[in-house]
Image (cartoon, rainbow, N blue to C red; front, side):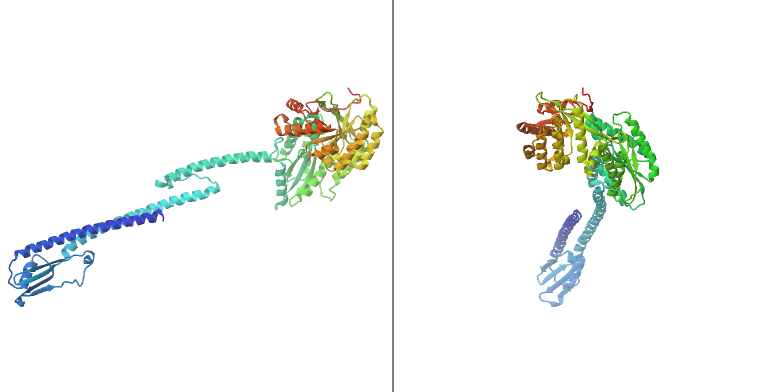
Length: 633
């Protein structure tokens, strides 16, 4: 039962009891007055000791002071003296008589007669009834006033409760409007204070949550190095444009920073980050002039931007500005080629995948064209492999004219009894002498199945370099693709050529990627065995990125494993990497495999890795790669 009904019930009971109490008091007062009336009658009747006259005379005498309802005088000997008035039963009882019940009767006996009377109760009852009526009226009036006041207060109270409940219900909308405390008075005032306090605290919590969410969103959707948006935002944007019903057109530009891998190897990761940051600045400067305010880093070395509302002809101004910035930046660093750009048009309702393939084709053509070049593909002509075909021609050309030069980077032995080597890095150039991105050359060679021809050219060029330059002392590591190393015909060719150059073969270490070797364990084992037969050693590079197993150690048995550079990064602070390296070193020493840590760029990393008992260290902190000279110093 609610408060309102409970209060009404309690109030009804209280006033009911009050009315009953007033009635009881008036009833007692009436009984007292009736008793007085009877006593007065007795006193007067007792003063008449003898009465010999008739009854009517007696009635008239007594009626002067009393009002009778019933009067009966009966003489014992003379019936003529008898007199009767009224009746004992009230035939028409008034409302007062129904409320109050009293009988004022008396019987008196004379010497010769008997008198029975009943006094009229009207005078006695009327006074009490009038008093009761007044008290009841006042009580009922008070009850009604209180009830009306309570109803009014409850109406105000309910309005306050409804306002509070509506406010609480609207909290889910996070409107956070100020609480109208004037609508929450009296007993509801604490609720208003609590709501206002809760509103402030909740708003502060939500604001704090939004700030943290913005920070996390920024971290998740903004690249830390360049400040550009991440690939996820790019995917959302390209889907939004492709699904838009509104008429849209413009161009998509993809910029590939193809020298990133080379700079990371030659100068270290910090230099690579600075290189990406400078390219991002060039893109941002050129794009801002075209009204672009959002840029994307879609992969480690690829950037993208949309320029809306322009044609490919109009976009040349942007590309010229971008190339000019790249050329200016190229004058301050060692690589001549900074980046290449590919640009394609788009309209709404396009196929995102086809557009990206088209843009990648444009970038591929730009990469094979020269330093900091760009290329525009204006139409979808159905020949999406145009860029790849251009790469095929370019790779065949550099293989035929041996368009390669070697850089070398030494490995520092951690133990004087350990014989290590210098790694050779191949750098390719086109017929104009412009550098080609190494990662792109290798990837396109794999795509067009030219990797074996490319590896053959590199090996032949390396053998010739070492054979014709006796001043180049020591051992050298040469990178070959895993697909070549596990190709039976290539291994047979390699065995034959190395058998004819055993003195050079004894100085070679072929470096092969771990993930590629693990795809075909039997072929990998055969490659290592065949190389050992002709005196060549084998190193597994980027070790730790794949799913290494004891079976790989036991059956393939390479001479070196080169840990991926990610294990050296802040190794002094990473206990998990320390545990992994300690385990690998322990296993390797048991079966005679040497462990080389790569990507060493800080003194703390070097000291920690030496404590972990690796056999060799390679990285920018140890030595910077430099072009190999025919006369080795």
